Length: 378
Image 1: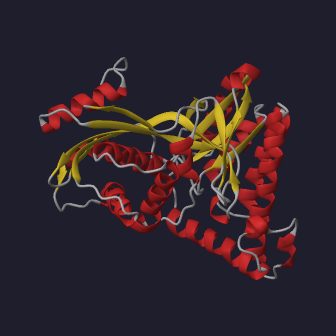
Image 2: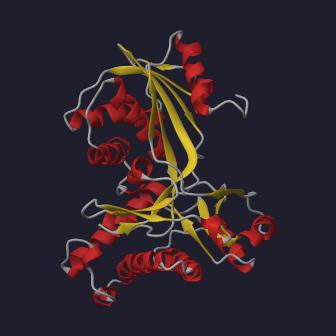
């Protein structure tokens, strides 16, 4: 693929080449970054994600049986019939999850071309799931409200992949709006949008992929969710969203208490960030990002040496604030950086990684992008 050729044209041509016919539909869904509000989505919390300009593109045509080709697994060729490599659960799971909700569709010839880096904490799995979902909805002319699309995509992860996630990633991929932070309420599923254009304020949002693989993330993620649910039970409330300030002090178990302290204080930081953004007080936003990282590192214990190195180096080099994003134990850091300091911050992050013998980080500038798109039907 040449860099001048749009991704949708490339994947459509790839579909023609592999299957010998035009794709009937093409959809795309983005990865996401979460400004703040980490590990609170499964506690009925408020989250503040935005789509990034990295998409999973999917073409589809109706077929009597499944044929799946992914550019990320090109060495495997076309996966047909009853072959089920682990990653295809995200594809087959969409069909099954749709059926669970009463929407029935057949199999398809599919081509997947994703540019959301896996393992970076940028929701590559949600981008894949949502792009397949949008492609199948269009292919089989299903009328699925967007709120149900979120539930269906989340169910793929929780029931067919085995990741007990909340709805943050799927909501961001499906609902995000260009130039805005998505304010999503995981309790009542209400949506608001907060304009956010860092360059107009002399700022950059930097995403630092530490290129450190997630370590035991599925089991550890499930453990953190269980701890949060346990804390709510001990406090006699439906979820930690309902906890009063400093309620964690009433929990005798020190580990469960720390987990609860992260969730309760993180929800407070979300509200403070909303107010700071609306007041264009970006220094306060940066301070809240730093505090969020400290809480994720110390109370929720989901950070890693690579994440801490990147966060600390970015802050020292002049970032207003930085924190790890995603489930943790690897992945990426988001940093709010004055534009005139961005080169210095990037160099300092790379230098710190080298001094510790860590992988060379992959650094990109991010800005709120469009959510999922149905691009065409022939």
